[in-house]
Amino acid sequence: SSHFVLDRQAWHAQGPAPTMAISSVRVALLGAAAWAAAVAGCPAGEGFAPHTQTCVTCAEGTWSAEGSSECTRCRPGTWSSAQGAVSIDTCTMCSQGKWSSQLGSPTANSCQACPAGRWGGSAGLGSHLECTACVLGMWSSERGAKSKDVCQACPTGTWSGVTGASTDRTCISCSAGKWSDQAGASTQSSCTKCNRGTYSETRGASSEGTCSACPVGTFQPALGQANASVCIRCAPGNYSVLPGAASCATCPPGTWSGGFAATSCNLCPAGKWARAPGSLRQDQCMPCWNSSDCLEDKSVLVTVEFVNFDPAALPEAQQSNLRAALAGELASACDVQNASVVDLNGNSAMVSLGPRGHVVVTRDPSIQVSAWVLDMKEGLTAQDVAARLYSDSFRATLGNSTTSVVGPHAGAKVASVSLEPKAFAPLTTSTWTTTRTPSKATDEGGHGMHADVPAHRHQDMRPTGSSGTRAVAAPLSAMLLAWAAALGGEA
Image (tube, rainbow, N blue to C red; front, side, top):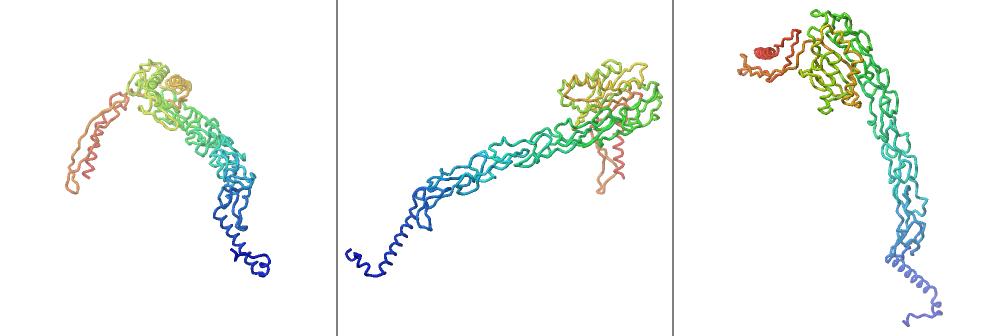
């Protein structure tokens, strides 16, 4: 160590060389300190600054734990105004309804309000996309919203397919001919088309009540019509007694109509009858040769068409009550006993629901009620019966009777009544079995050919003439089918 000691005078006597040596020592010492700081880390709240090669205090928006060599920036959605922060807890989250994408924000001013059409239900959101969007069918013009309660539903009669809508202008009105009672609807399919027989000129309609019925004498078979011009006049030979009809009824037997938009059909004069429905002229009413009252057999087949009604949905007991009630009204109108009204199978004091017992169901359910009226009184003419059954009052009576059984909610309406003077013949089925019938012909391979007639055929055995005798054509028809098939094989 004695060799390393230099007094002040000796040091200066050496000239500038020793000065350079001590400067090098100082640099070496400083480098060693910087290296040590970089390796060992800085104190909490400080970070290593390469340009000064020293640990410096962390600035606002940053923090540093003990032993860290750098200051960490506060993440997006947070901020800090403190210097020398030692924990991430110093970074304060943006409040609900706000967001910030800035790293290391030194101030709360970086937190921006969630845009209109969105809301922020939690603190510390790092992007405007993290603000929750109002769902389809909703909108909000409020900025900085904290709850989904700010999202308002598009009003009834409108819909919106936009997410995060900021104005009610995104709510699109249902087009004319449609309506919607649903608030906050998200698809155009929520707009329901006006029913057949109706139309609506209103855009953005909120109820079916805006759909106006086509007037009597007209009809419209399509859904969602937008103006009154679509109501089609009933053609000659047809009529309509109901507003909002989807179709016109054919003028029933015993009547005719030669004009458009008819609301009733003209009765044939006494002693004459139009057997075919849909007659256009009075001269189609032909004389009744076998009886002046046109009721030769003292019986008629009556068919009533109901619309907006599906009795198949009724309990069996209620269906039975309805069949009996309508039979009673028919008996009263024709001035006969209830037992003289029978259904298509011959059951007394009953009517049949549906054509041959089957209900026709569409979007506008309809049904035919059929029954025979027997033992008509002497002196009563077909025109008398038609005048009663084709009247507005009888249709109203049937409607009221139906309502009394099934309730007003059913909405049943009588569209038409039709009668045919003819001999009573209940529905009857005949079943027989036919066997394979060989033929004399052979095919190209020399094999005998044959004709197959389906087994177990069912045939309506009601007589077609006025004499009341049963038809015998059914078995004969089967024989002719087999014979024709055999001839085809020979050809």
